[in-house]
Length: 215
Image (cartoon, rainbow, N blue to C red):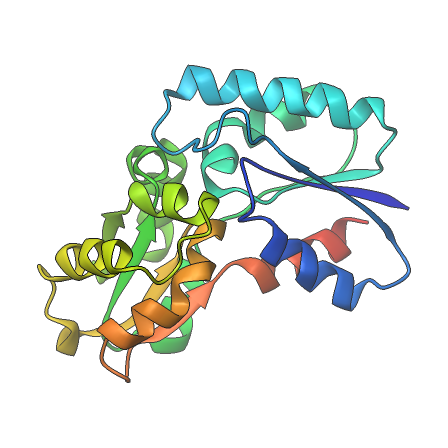
């Protein structure tokens, strides 16, 4: 079986690597839309066009399933793509529910791209899972740009994250959700800036479990 993983850049590689470990007998294709990265600061219409073009290319390769390993593309385009293509299409969701289930005794900070934070899909997710209003949303638009330059622990990255985190009293927070696949590359620098009790949660494992269920 041929399974495609699609992202705007290198972020989806972390999801692909997880899938390769648990599905060692499958064939994988990875498509990174590096001509248009980052998606998170584009308009919804632009992202829909990029995803449509990528799906046309991937389905032309005869893939059996597509994993949209990009939270922004999932937010904007997955529902539309599912209506057009008769193959399993798996998207990425910010793992807010998992964070609340695991560590919901305190607040949860969901980091994501601006388009994901503003999107209807995330708003509906929050309405369903955040019954006690424990989740805060933090857009981090520059992290994708840093990741694509493979700049993971520079002084500029540290200053950017330190400033972004400075508005939050992390004694009130149990966890931080990495709501963009690119953000996994910044765990080390985030760890150095956050208290030890703050746990990281991402959607990689849940996405691969959903892929297995749909195959």
